[in-house]
Image (cartoon, rainbow, N blue to C red; front, side, top):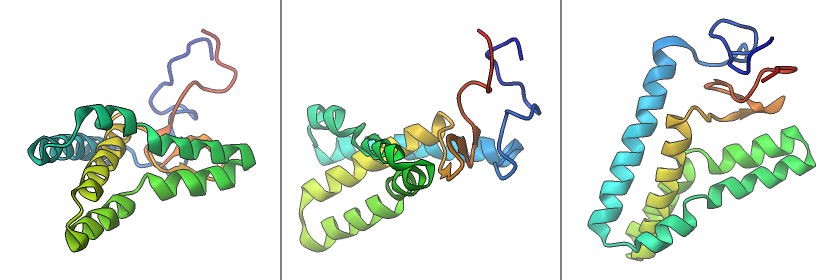
Length: 144
């Protein structure tokens, strides 16, 4: 391949298990909706925007698990890139009345939403670039 662009329908555009077409677009729009809702709720909560900026990328520290291999990396990455964790944290905030749990949950939701909107999906154990939203990055052996 002589271009760094990944062509739709090429063997590099997605893994065989990736979502394609309208469902893929809807999942990315869902990410945008999550960002909007989380940022709006965070604004209403009066949370610190400084902390929002500092903590927004913390879930990506899970990528260090890829140092142990693609399977371990995918497990760690997926564990912190689903809405289950922030949902449980939001429930804990509600039960304990601890607003900082709610703030963390909203930041976490915003992070996941950004990833989904940009096409960074949940990872398969084959490689970091293999996601449920399609392959990310350059095609193997591509020339810029």
